Every structure is written in structure tokens, then in C-alpha cells.
Length: 269
Length: 163
Image (cartoon, rainbow over all chains, first blue to last red; front, side, top):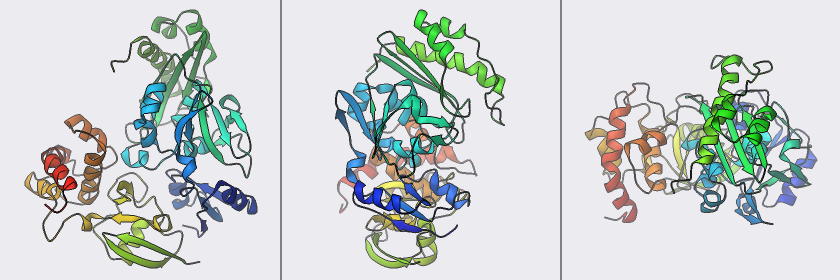
């Protein structure tokens, strides 16, 4: 692995200062993606800024009537938070299904969103729930945040501080997972709030995206049959050793239908 | 560039000069000679290198030693007490939960973490919590059995370490 300098600032201000000082510097959150990438010599940052000591970044709470999840909250903390479970159980469930326990113990929501892996779970959740990504500089609506594969609207020097989620009436996340990595081959996040239906897809394209045809179909008729009646084109979908583009196209309405069933079924708890 | 770190490993204070790029597992094995922690895939998949950092299980191949500065690290060498095997170690032996033994240290560190994290275990919960640990002898059946068998004694020991 290439050498690098290591900083562990105690405050966001100090982290911002360090980040502004050198454009070859990368932020280190849980490191569940960045560290393997560096160990494979696919990334060569001159310095890492470890955010682990900025305690305020790990908070989970309520802010302005929305659920707030700090950027450094681990997947495990989100999955077991009583507040998340009460407000958006689908989000707690999503966090509890990321990777494996060793990844969930360390991986964070901010790290996952900044990395924006096309098969990661969280990008579909922020899109589906119309969340806002808050940074050291501004607030970015999820629809503007996700730009392309491993690319976000984050500017150099910008640090994610947390994500705020409006509470939906009903939401569900259904993942067809790669059995080895637990990344999604296709993941569907469905949320219903008032009259608005949002359906977002991860794992199937170059980046997480909203499925407007499914949103329209479910807006007219919120049933699994309405979702299954939608045909998704395989053009522009990913194809790899795990699944063809046609197979992913088939999974999208099917998993959406299963998410509808979950939304219509009262939580047993 | 070397950086000075101070941490506690298996209850003993350690101060050392490390390069920021050293994975924790390299520091533990090559510098402290704690070779019980194994390097399997070295690419964040197999879980053989699992250790506890501040009581939480993580892969020591995916963590730099500098990140453990100030932390309490526990490896498989710190699990037994006073020459007596931990109930989980004894259960792995009793239930033949190791064949080649390469994955065993990681399995035990993950098993300890799941007993801490989960209010109660079932076969399904144990299997779900072992998703980050790979056994290529595919001896999962006996590993699951051993963890279930040691749950009660492990909880009792955690509550009363001096017993």
C-alpha cells in the first residue's frame, strides 16, 4: 500500500481546515470501502482525515420534525436505534442487512453515501425517502446528491455531517442480495407519503435512480399487481456475472410488488 | 513517516512507532507477535482477522493500526483467563467446531461479539451473525452448535468475570 499521512481531528472545523489544505486528502469514516480500495492500490490519497473523534457526527435524534442520522452513525447503530425503528422501520431494517456484522459494526451512513457505490443500500433509501444530505457547507436534496457511479454532488472540501429523513406513512426496502457480499443485485426502496409514491432502485444501474413508471403506476393503484404490470426496459441496466440486464429488469417490478405487500401489511411489532 | 501510538492489547499497555499504512493485523502479528489473529483473504471478506476494538468486533485487515491509537484491543490470545479456556473455546473443542482451525480465532471473536450484541441466540440468529466469517472446511454446523452450547456460560462469565 502507498504511504499516506494520518490526521484525527477533534472538531469539524479542524477537519474542514485539514481537508482544504490538500486536494489529495480523503476523509476516512468507517473505512469499509476506502481501506480495501487503498490496500488494492486503486486509490492513493496523500493523507487521510479520520472523523472518528468528532463525537457529534455519530448522533441519532430528531431535528426540525425529521429523523436525523449523523454521518458517522454505524449501520449497527442505525439498525438498533429505537428512534429509527419507531419512525422509519424500513430504514432500520435496511441498515441491519448491509454487508455482515463486521461491516455493520464499523461502516457508516455518511461513508456509504459519499462513496455512492452503485449497489449500496443507502443511496436508494435517501432517494426513496426524499432525504436531505447535510454537509459542512449546505443541505443537498437526495435527488440532486446522486450524480453518477461513485460520484456525488459533494464539492472538494465538503464534509457530510448527517442526513435528515421526513417520516413516510409507509416504506419498505426489498433487496435481492449478492449472497457473498450482500450488496444488492437489485434493491428497491418504496415510500408512500400523502399522495406521493417514490420508488428508487439500487444495484441495477450506474447509480441509484428513481423508477418513474412504477411511481406513476402505484400512484394510480397501490397494489402489487399494478407494480407487476409495469415492464422495465433492460437497456442501460447493468449486466455482470451475477445477473443479466434482462434479469435485473425482471426483478425491479417484482421486488417493488413485494415492497408494496410489506407496506400494506401492518408491522407485527 | 512513523507515528507513535499507545493502546491496550489484551489488557497490557503498548506504545509503538507505526507507519499509518500498516493494517492493525500486521501490527499485531509482525510487531507484537500475536499470531493467533490470522490473515485469510486480506481483502475484507473472510473474517479470520477479527479482533475486538473497544469491545466491538472488526476486521483487523481493514483498519489501520493508527486508528486503534488509544483503544482497547482484544485478540484471541486475550480470551482465555488464568490458563483456563473461555467457555466458547472449550465448546469449540468439545463440539469439534474446528477442522483446519484457520478461521477459528475469527469465529470465536465474532461469536463473543454476537453474544454481547444479541439479547438471545437462536440457530437463525447465529447463522445470520456469522455471515462475515468464512470457514472453507465448511464446518458451520458444528460451529453453530458450539456457539449455542456456550451462550449461557459466556453470558455468566461476562457478568461476573472473576467467577
